[in-house]
Image 1 (cartoon, rainbow over the protein chains, first blue to last red):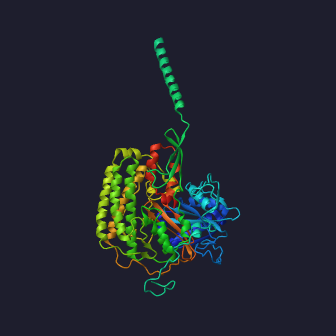
Image 2: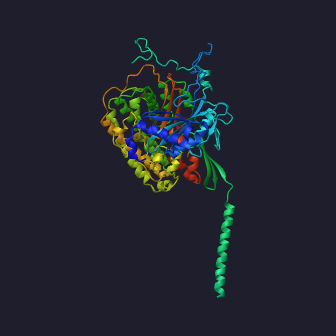
Image 3: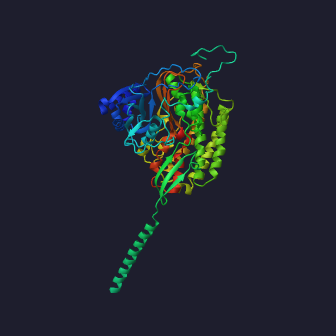
Length: 215
Length: 393
């Protein structure tokens, strides 16, 4: 595909073609996709095809490794940590709703690869089962995934099969819990009330502001 | 004949003996290897980074940076803040170019809200963005001298960076942490006299670059300490996700200011993306020097044509970002800085993945330090240029 040919394709066609190319490469391992025209591409692949999807994308020319992380889709049981500790716990919506390209599990791995010539990025997601939160490591595909997988392992408790060294990067090695999971409380908010609760202070002399009112 | 033969014999014998002596000497000098700790407190690390290097003699056989001395958990903290409050946090990621950290976050939120800052705000954002790049990278150029034992450049860098910080302070009220960018525009307009002042400072900064070029880049010691040292080939740089000057120094023509359409003013002016084919420490430093020059050119051109109008779009007083996911990254002083923002239509982000440049840039250290000599560790680290707040977040 020459650069001139690419320039002639409008943005969304180009991005849809990326999805088509990936589907041709990995078949039904591509579960879902979402294209926001002129902006970005999201694809979700089967958990057991995580590594082969990375490999397929690299073969398609997406050889710039941007980042790898995870998302915990469970709403936080602590809200924003602004509850009154003396009052009874408030009712919270605990339905898990995944974002673009759908999903079935609470935890999802998310990575982003970029095509250096087309300047198109792909956000790749895959479900991580709750019972056995392990996906294949991307180290053999992108060497730079090493540290990102260590960070994700530490922060979300997701294992990466084939990673040589999943030591903690930030926390002490005997730390318990995975801080970026939603059910891990932010202790600073629990031991001391957050002073920034009042975000919008009323203007002097101004009337009561309605939510969504234009300034 | 006999005498000649014996002569050859003796020569051969002495040669063999010399070889054996050499070998024995080498056997005796072979060391067990030692582990060298650099940091957490070391002048070569901007912050607290510890590098553990296993040495064989003077050569590194294995090296690993140990991070986490400065982890502040911003990704978790953003989940309990409102959108306008987050800029105060992300300011502190790369603290030498703070304003540049705010921009991609604000752009990501604006993308989800489908609003765009007015042209004047875009222009001023770009100017302040480039000023933070100049403040950041000029300190790098000065610091580079210190790593190699030259003291003078760092004083010059601190002196000239001060002019830029004064400008940023004049416009935003904060020298290091402006917290000036708002969803929909900027907190305020430029102060009176900013344009003229900035032109003078840009001239000073160009002189600073010339001085640095003569003082450092033409210096024989500097060249011999950096040329051919710490070479990172193109494909390795791509695999590790290196960005910014580190990637361009490996010959990759990639600059997010030029290569993507953002509501910023970079594509309105004429400037050049500098690359270097060598991929060594010298190339990385050289590309950064050129970038400061280009930045002064960008700022100068932008000053000529700041559009008039408001600096703030119409936004609700209480900002709720619609449900969705967005990724925005910009070419920050250290490299690609991006935010993956997940919103649930709430007052604050549901999840923010902060992709900081230094984290990727420094993850190549175990690879690039393998086999180098101990004094080169410092120059390679200096040329990779990282900020601890940008690694640990």
